[in-house]
Amino acid sequence: MQPTTAPAPAAAAATVPPVLRLTDIEKVYQTKTIETTALNCVNIAINRGEFVSVMGPSGCGKSTLLSLMGLLDEPTRGTIEVDGRPVTSYSDRELAALRNLKIGFVFQSYHLINDLSVVDNVELPLLYRAGMGGKERRQRALAALDRVGLNARTGHFPGQLSGGQRQRVAIARALAGSPEIILADEPTGNLDSVMGEEIIELLLELNRRDGVTVVMVTHDEVQARKTERIIRFFDGNQVG
Image 1 (spheres, rainbow, N blue to C red):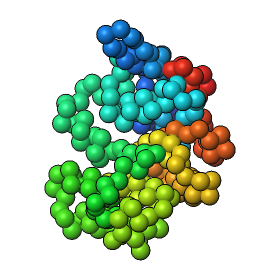
Image 2 (cartoon, helix red, strand yellow):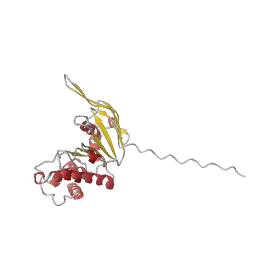
Image 3 (cartoon, rainbow, N blue to C red):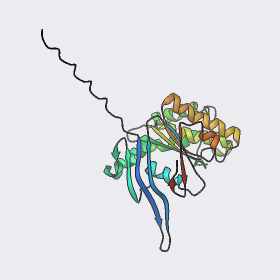
Image 4 (cartoon, rainbow, N blue to C red):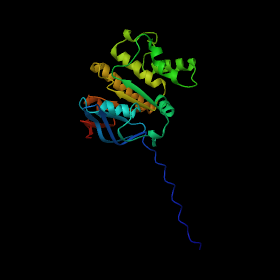
C-alpha cells in the first residue's frame, strides 16, 4: 500500500492592510515661547469600509487628527500609512494625487463658494483631475447631486439653500471624485437635530451601500453610537 500524503496546507490568505494606519503619532505646535502638544502617542487603524466616530471635548486634538488622516498636515513624530505604504515614501505630486483621488472632505462650515452655482461647487475639485474633460466633470457632479437628493437644485447658489442642503452639497462635492475615504469634521455641527439626523443617515447609507470608509468627528453621542466604533480623545491623548 502506498503511503498517504498529507494535503498541502492551503495558502494563507493575504492580509489586507488598514486603509489608514497611524502609529505612535505626536503633533506639537511651537511658537517662540509656547510648545503645545495637540496629539500624543496616537495609534489608530481604520479598516476599509468602516464607519468610525472620533469624540472628545473641544481642543482635544480631533481636528488635528483629521488633518493628519487627510494628509493635509504632517506629524511631528510617528508614521502614517495608506494601504500599508508610509506617506513619507510619496513624492509631493503623488501625495497631492492621493488626496485628490482617494479622500473626500466634508467640513462643518461647508466651504462652498457663494458666487458659484451648486453644480459648479460640486464640480470644482474635479478640475484638478488630470485627463478628465468638462463633460465627464459635469456628469459626475450631477450624479453626485442626484445621490444626495439635490438634482432639482443644481442651478441654485449656496445662499439660496438651507443649512442641511448646503451640507448635502458639500457631501456631493466629496462624492463626485468617487473617494474611498470620507473625512467629516463635525458635519452636523451647524444643523438642527432634524437636519443633522438626515446628514448622518446619508453618511450611513454611503458607508453601507457604497462601502465608503467614513471617519467622522462629532460631539453628538447619539450619532456616534450609530457608527461601528468610537475613538475618544482627551487633551491630545487617545483614551478609548
